Each structure stands twice: as C-alpha cells, then as structure tokens.
Image 1 (cartoon, helix red, strand yellow):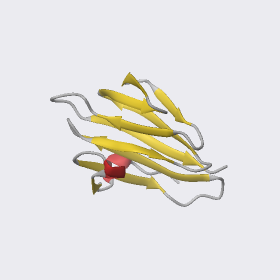
Image 2 (cartoon, rainbow, N blue to C red):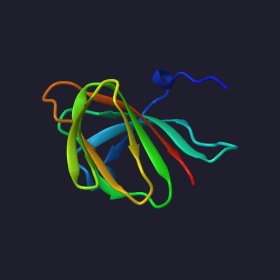
Image 3 (cartoon, rainbow, N blue to C red):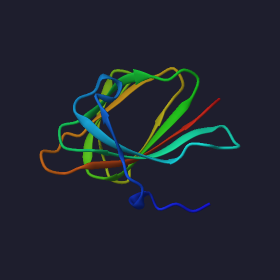
Image 4 (tube, rainbow, N blue to C red):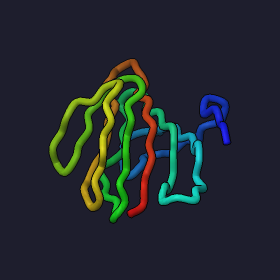
Length: 114
C-alpha cells in the first residue's frame, strides 16, 4: 500500500496530552498486522506542544523532519532538530514543544506494542 501523507487532510488536535495549542495530525496508517500501533505525520506550529505523558509497555518514536524544539524525556530536557530520532521507552514520560517563533516542527510518530 502506498500513501502520500501530504495529500491527506490533517485533523486538528487541541491540547494534545494537555500540551499547548492546536497541532495537526495525519493518520498515515492505523491498521497493521504486526505490533505497530500507528504511524502519524504531525505538525506542531510555533509555540505548540505535545504535553508530557506516559505510554504503558509500548515504545513510541519521534522522527524530526523539519524545525526544532525541546524534548523532555523522564524529566530531562534536550534540544531536538531535523534528523533527530527519539525513542520513548516503555513506561517513560515524554513531551515535545516547538520553541520556534516562526517555523513549524514536523515529525513522524509511530508506536510499537510490546
């Protein structure tokens, strides 16, 4: 199956995991025969965020395509930018904020069930 995520209308998600503002999410794929849970393209406009949250036994990955921001993992904060791949381990906490004043932060997000 082939999909172009730029051709799919994004859904607006307000205050994602108690984050700030409205982010845009494209559900690229959400039905799998493997342990993959979902595969999304997500855009965080300047100043928006995905609030700090925890997944149970699943691993979630963020792939930064464009822009920059601040990632919080288990209480530690770190700058992230295009090319960074973040692995959010099972039972850990994580959140992401677009710290730019003018650029969108564009990421791919996918989650794998244990």
